[in-house]
Length: 310
Image (cartoon, rainbow, N blue to C red; front, side):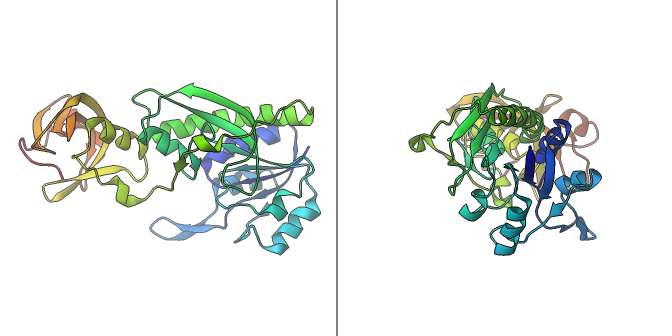
C-alpha cells in the first residue's frame, strides 16, 4: 500500500518503523520544520525526520499543511492512504480528500474522551482509571472522525506521563498495523463518535506546573504524575524552587488549615498537608542539585519541619 505518513515527535517513530517493517511503500514523510533546540539553539530535526532519512524516504516540511503547493505535492504522490500521528497541524478538507482509502489518525485516548493535543497527560491529571488508543478516519473536526478500532487498558496510581507515552508509542504501532490490514481487506467498520461524551485535552503550559497545596492530595499527586517529565511539578521551598518528581497519597480525607505545611520528614519522604488529605513527596530536585529520592537528599541536607510549601 502506498502511504504518506505525517508525524513529528518521538511517539510517532515506532508507527513509522512499523509501516516500513510491514512492507508498505512509504512514499513520503511529512513532519514539522526543523527548530532551534538546546542552549546553543542549533537547528534540530524531528525524530520522525531522522528515521525517514535513515530509510531514504522523501521528507516534506511545510510551514502550513494548508498551502496549495503542499496539497498539490500530496496529490501528485497519489497515496492510497495518509496516516497521521501527532503531526502538529490540523488538516483541511482538500488534503483529507486526496488518498483513495482515506486519512486515518492514531489518537492516544479512547475517543470521544480527551480530544486534543495532550491526551496522555490529561488522562493522568484527571485521575482516569483507564485510557487507550483509537484509530479513526479523519474529518475536518478536531479528533471527531469515525472510529475504526480502539484498545483500552487500565491505569495504575503510579504511572507517569512519560511512562504512559512510551507504552502508547509501542501500542500505537500495533493498532496502526492492525487497522491498515483491516482497511486493505475492506474488513472494517466505522463507528460514529458520541459527541455528547466528548472531553478536551488542551496543550500543557509551564504555569500549570506550580503546585497549589490548597487542592486535595489526590489532585496534586495526579498533577505530579501527569506533567512528568514536562513541564515538571514544582513549589516554593523557602526562597528556592523545589521540583517534585514523585509522590504518593498518604491520606485523601480530612481538611487542613495549615496548607502546605511540612509535618514530617524521614527516609520515606516529606509529609505535606494539603487542602484535603496528606501528600508524601518522595523524589525532589532543588537548585544546582540532582534529581534524587528524599531518602538520599536528607543524608547530606536538611528539610525544615514546619516550613510552608507554596
